[in-house]
Length: 220
Image (cartoon, rainbow, N blue to C red; front, side, top):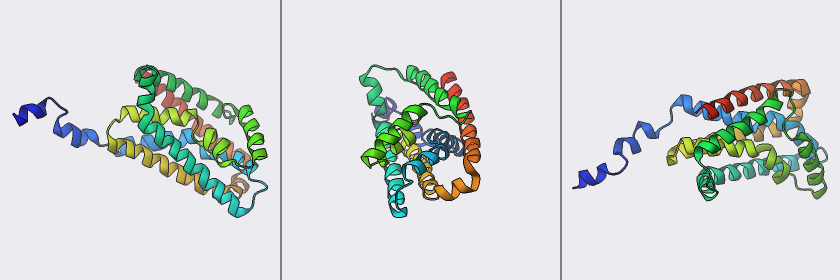
């Protein structure tokens, strides 16, 4: 009786076994995807512009808060994203294609070191600077946890449905944002070291990675 009852559900080995786990290659792929879409190198000039008049300790606080806010936003969409799609009646397949297009559009201008929507971001920079709080807008949103990052975690969370897989995705996001915090912390030194040309080169590399990932999402 118990055996028959268990057979009508998810097999024990499938739920707890290897199918539940992500391979090292998959984890690395998730990490690279999130690093590319969050693009901390591309956010450095914006961070420097927003904090140019701030004291060193205040810059560290702004960097920390922006990364925390961005992580919390990604946590929400990792766990609630599927319910949001169901609420609006959007199929996962349609979202993967649409998400792939969004990621492609985000990556294409990065090949020319010109992030998508920079004009609107510059307006947000001015507006946020006037308000005095830049950690949430525009640093956390839309610079770090923008439409591309949200789309990426939504697609990844649907591809890997188990809790441990979602935690792995969030662990990768946490690691990327920890690196982002360190880069913000050392932003002035890094900018002096590699300059705008170096940052543009890194942004172009991230853009190329995003375009390839976007095409893969659509093909999948």
